[in-house]
Length: 164
Picture (tube, rainbow, N blue to C red):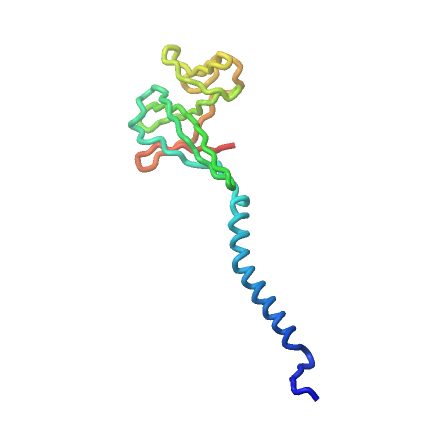
């Protein structure tokens, strides 16, 4: 009879294979799962387009004159980082009574400019004119200039910017 001990269920080689497999799988999971999450998580994050943008103190805007303001927004969508320029016109009527218009024409999304001589906004694409309060005076635009929702916080004028 042999002096080696034999288990009726498992020999030493099978036991070492099982323990090595369990330890290897555990180490691979500990290292691999965070790496997978690192590479996948940016793709799962949705880009938001809902921000409050500060336009600065209200005192920066003269009374009854539409004043241009431009701002850049940087968006991160997955691994893509993009920056886009936007514009607005701030019309301070009295005290804290403010209207903020988008500088984008409602016809073909051209940029409008304030023409002080005509006392109106002018879109150069199709010679469209908008009144001081954004209403269509002439040209093909189907609706008045878009307005931003505004609020005052700690002396700062904020607009609610929704993209999309």
